[in-house]
Image (cartoon, rainbow, N blue to C red):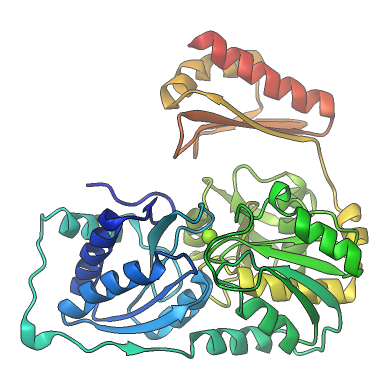
Length: 427
Ligand code: MG
């Protein structure tokens, strides 16, 4: 039984998902006996959290409830436990919910750990429990404070700048405004209440952040910040009210990390290598970045807004990232910084298709486009002297995602359009 996608379990929230949460609680409680649980603001969160907690307590595991808080705050708390459970569907719409399972270092459960859970939920190794081992459960209401205190250690200066935060009625509704105020910022909060009914699509992409961009322009703020539903992601708006693209955010945060050793995904811009970083590339998906950072590295990220700071945890930490970009904006005007970074024409899109279509087209792509090297870590990446092309089947939809970047618009367009033609022709 396969339950896990690249970011945990995600489903429409209904009684089936509540039952599954109970089963996952039973499985995790059998594997570990000291667990912290938390949830984002979704309306189905309490039902799922109670179900998972019931499962944990039934097995005799000790369980502490950290309440409503971001995934990275649970990840930071997990260092004092054997594992962490977060009830969230991340950036999915509010009718969805899900379960993320975290190790004490903040990393997501490995494929082996996921398989163990799946086997127990599927009944291969059914869970047994005894009435006299069941635990009472406790609350754990210091997780946010501990996370904030740890982040503040890295930002001793008074930041003194105006920031607009769009909490989107998600899990960061309290912590990000609170943290930034305690660092010295003057904070304007948008959608800062935990209704779990997101007033706009909660994925932090430019198309969803009109209100934030307008508020930054209207208020003359130095910075705007947005998160996804569980605030493991953070994206920003500069002092001109312009959304900062993910590739530039990666460069800005990498530059400020003080490390030359950076981890990012295959589909991020070549600007990061151009800036002189030693870059290790992983398949697309932030869990791969976290996994690679276990081998070392000062900073890692995915351009979707998932930024990993290994000194805090191996979970992408949108809250720490908010403090980091505020600190940068207190020293430099963000719009000037953004415009000074190298940037190349980059095209992203998708066509209908699957893994078999990519396989069929592989030889023709190689023969016609003549790359200087290729990489099959995730889909097919062709490297050229003046750019690259990535063709990869989506993990969640019947689509092939195509990304092309080159030093000139014409070359990027040539790689993109040729690949579409070749894949279509090879069907
Ligand atoms: Mg998320």
